[in-house]
Amino acid sequence: MLRFGILSTAKIGRELVVPAIQDAENCALTAIASRDLDKARAMADRFGAPHAFGSYDEMLASDVIDAVYIPLPSSQHVEWSIKAAEAGKHVLSEKPIAIKASEIEELIKVRDRTGKLISEAFMVTYAPVWLKVRELLRDKAIGELKHVQGAFTYFNRDPGNMRNIPELGGGALPDIGVYPTITTRFVTGEEPQRVQARVERDPQFGTDIYSSVRAEFGSFELSFYVATQMAARQLMVFHGTEGTIEVKSPFNANRWGAEEIELTNQNHATSQTFRFPDSRQYKRQVEAFAKAAMGEAAEVVTLESSLKNQQFIDAIYRAGEHESWEKV
Ligand SMILES: NC(=O)c1ccc[n+]([C@@H]2O[C@H](COP(=O)([O-])OP(=O)(O)OC[C@H]3O[C@@H](n4cnc5c(N)ncnc54)[C@H](OP(=O)(O)O)[C@@H]3O)[C@@H](O)[C@H]2O)c1
Image 1 (cartoon, protein in one colour):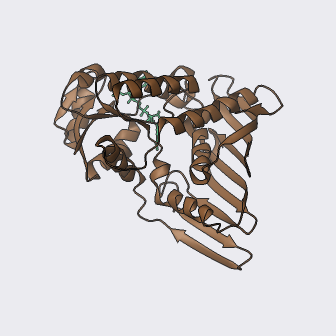
Image 2 (cartoon, helix red, strand yellow):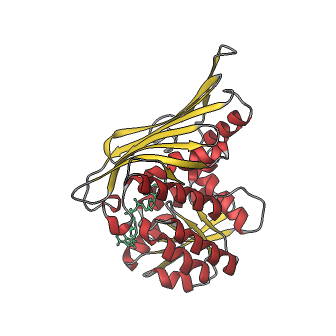
């Protein structure tokens, strides 16, 4: 069993990842740390964790955990990933693991020096729906892929929310722009070469709230938009020479709506629906992470992949500053 400590009492931990750690076959929830000991205790009691700490440092210094899960505000992921690895703990950090690609280069050095696993919590790469899309593309179920289209939006103008605070790593691109990019890269195995983008910021918050992106990969194009002040929507569509794959509820499996793939192949005049009622992507994520941390074979998100994803996001920001193509 990999003994997990949780850095903070964050919502994503409380609602999805901590219950997943409890369900996982090879993980144990041993500690919760918060800046406030009472909050840590309350959450530890609620989930039956034997230890509670009133500071993140104290938990890292303890020997009751082997690994940490970090759901802190995004701008703090790098700092605490480094501290945790240096303290001898494996690290599962929430996305985005960093705000700039250069920070991930630093994390790679820390990983290599400490020998600890550091992985970004892109739960979508463990989700059955995305493994199926990858398989369908590899099997040429839609012929040659030509275009990927994506949308991820929600409405949130709460000035106290991390997503609207630049110092905490707020912005639509770090929060949700990372999903069309990681999923497209994950299922195709290809990388973007150049990008064009329109990036709009909120005049009050200063964070990016809308981006419309066009990116050229080797043999296909990806276009997507993300927004934090538009009605909620999530969709990814893969369009090839023979058919299409529509991924419904592609990111928040079965929370946003039923997670489904609609596959059509015009050459064979067929259409098929794949349903994934038992996605449990967070449980699969922590189980794979624990296996990898314990030296067993498992496919997890590598820092090298995170670096490429962040280089893509960095290029989108740069492209948003002018009208021409920007190299990734
Ligand atoms: N993979 C997913 O599906 C998914 C979904 C949602 C969010 N996320 C990611 O998870 C992370 C946390 O998101 P969330 O919405 O769960 O956050 P949240 O509820 O706002 O929690 C963040 C936690 O960080 C701690 N913290 C430390 N310094 C802070 C500061 N200056 N301001 C506010 N909080 C501070 C607080 O814990 P204590 O007070 O206990 O110390 C707080 O509970 C983000 O990076 C986000 O991108 C991922």
